[in-house]
Image 1: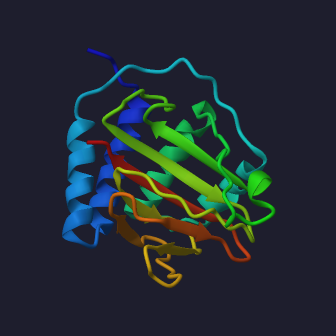
Image 2: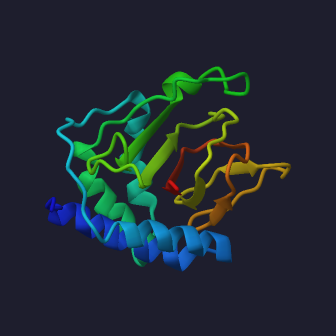
Amino acid sequence: MSERSVAMQAFIDSAEAAFTACANSPKASSVVERVFDALRTPAANSNLEGEQLPACTHLQGIAANTNRQGTLSDMMRRFMELEPQLRWRRRADLGTTASANFSEGHANVDIIGARGLEVRSDVWVGASLLGPGVRYPDHQHPPEEVYLVMTGGEFRHGDSEWFTPGPGGSFYNSPNIIHAMRSGDRPLFAFWVLAID
């Protein structure tokens, strides 16, 4: 059996508490439950070295502005303890709906998953960061997904209008639904979990 670091286990525990508390539909709760049930069994650790992208300069400010108590604050603090080990990446497929500043203005990270600190193919836990005035392209994927938003910013899925979940807002994306996000005059930061069936 693989061994999980104390810092990773603390992040998983805080993430489970936050996602569970904020899930706002039966489908979201089901995905969250499946993800964190799977994570009760550790998987192999990666040997990747941490690497930031330019958009990561916003992280300290986001962490400082997260509510100083409660589940969101605890999750953000635990994430920031892991962050130096994480390898941030850019989305390669820009599509036609990304803003012109998207490439330099965003960063994604797998905390757990194919390119994460804990390598898994059954569940992914990660985060997306947009600098101010950045529009993430429309995209879709087969796995169900739940977002947990830590900042302001707008999201859209399916035929919906743009909506603002706000800090602690959570929502469910069904399989293959087209979805996107965009920041306003401040950065956008959100965690997400995917259940890979």
